[in-house]
Image 1 (tube, rainbow, N blue to C red):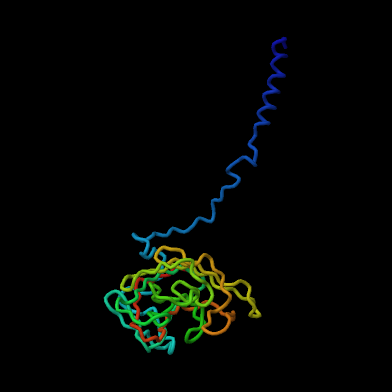
Image 2: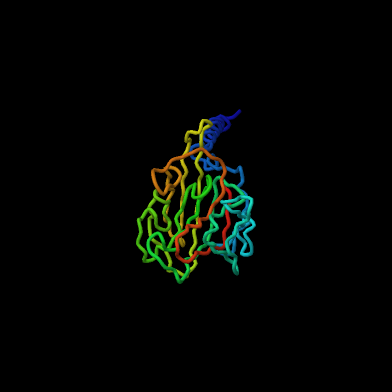
Length: 260
C-alpha cells in the first residue's frame, strides 16, 4: 500500500458518509402525502350544466310521471298534467312524491311560474320541493317555490328559503314565464337507535346559478305553525307540493338526482 492509497481511503469513507447524509427526508418528500386509492368513479358529465350526468337517476324524462305517485293514495300514479316536455300541478289532486327513496343526494330541477300569474304574497305561484317526505300532506323538509319576482312576502318563506327556517342569501328570481332552476345538495339527518338526533340535516342550494343556502343546518322538519323538530326516519321520497292557492299552477321539467 503506497502513500497515495492511504490518502484515498479516508476520502472514500468521507464520500460514503456524505451520501448517507443526503438520503431523502420524509418530511420533505412529496410522495409521503400522495394518496392513490380508492380511485374516484368515472362520471360522464352532460354537454350542458343542466344535462343529467351518466350516473343520474332521471325523475322526469319529459314524457311521463312513472317515477312518481300520489301522496294521498300511494297506490295511484301522479295525476298532474303532462305537456310537451314538462308537467304542471293539477290543482286539487294533492302532492306527488318519488317512488324511490333517497338519503343524501344532488338534485337538479327546473320550474316555471306562469306568465299570467295572479295573486300576491304566498298566494302567488306557491309550491315547494320537500327534500325528504316523512309522511302525508306537507310532512318533511321544504324548500319554498313561489313567485318572488317583485312580490313581497315574509323572507323565510320566499323562493329559496328553507321554509320558516332559512332566509335565502339573495333573491335571484326570474320574472314569471321564464324557466328557473334549482341545484340542491341534501345531506339527510342521522338518528340514534333510540330515535334521538345524531346529526342534523343540511342543505346547499343554488337558484339560477346563485347561491341561496350555504350548508344551512336545519332545526328539524319544516312547519307552517310552530317550531321545527326532528322525528326519526330513514331514506325518504322527494315530494312536490300542490299548494292549493287560487293562482295559476306552476310547471316543472328536467328533474334528475345523483345519490351521494
